[in-house]
Amino acid sequence: FGRVYLGYDDQLQRPVAVKVPSPRRFQEPGQVAAFLKEARLAAGLSHPNIVAIHDFGETEDGVVFVIAHYVEGQTLREYLSTVEIPHEEAV
Picture 1 (cartoon, rainbow, N blue to C red):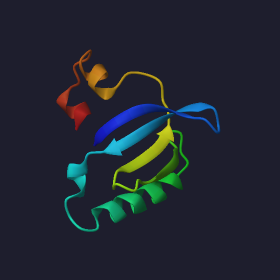
Picture 2: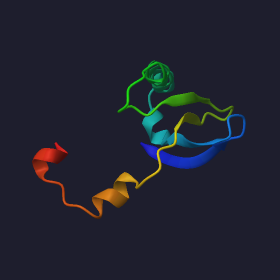
Picture 3: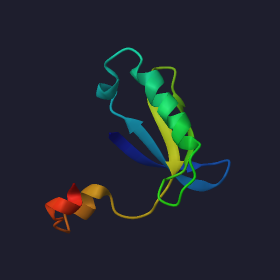
Picture 4: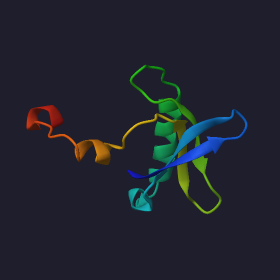
């Protein structure tokens, strides 16, 4: 995906996840617009198993970002380094 940073929302006084996709993800024309459309659709979802999206956009210099609910815990990389997942479960 890219990088996820721990941020802080000063207005609402809460931690947030700032997701910044890798620029390699946007090599073709229209990919940024498609990503932002997908973020807009995901922001409209409400489900216990889907992380809430609070904001998204693109900076003046073309960096795309998503601001999401911060979920405290291990990263996927950390989790996978501590367990062995059977092939069937991974699929």
